[in-house]
Image (cartoon, rainbow, N blue to C red; front, top):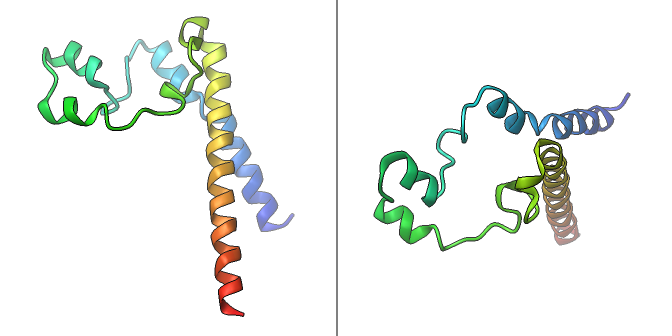
Amino acid sequence: MTLIKKLWIGIGVLILLSPIGLILPDWFKAGAAWGEWGAEEMQELVGYIPQGLEKLSSLWNAPLPDYAFQGWEERGLAHLSIAYIFSAVVGIAVTVGIVFAIGKFLVRRED
């Protein structure tokens, strides 16, 4: 088995394991991941929203907030797990595409 094939198998396993970050906190009633709080969660946790966070929170809106499609949060853990896997596949595809394009560009520049 080639190194590239082993790499893709490892990436595939990690993609399938990505919902663990969603499932384990739910099983243990742990709440949100530490440090990944939004403005609303900070309000609940400490009673106020830090000024810098409030200012910067509207700077960027994620295309898939919480790695899920709109309305999927209410559908349950199975749907959210599928959305996590989809997000992982999209993220890896975009990353590989960018790296491949940069590689092609650099190889052409050397000619």
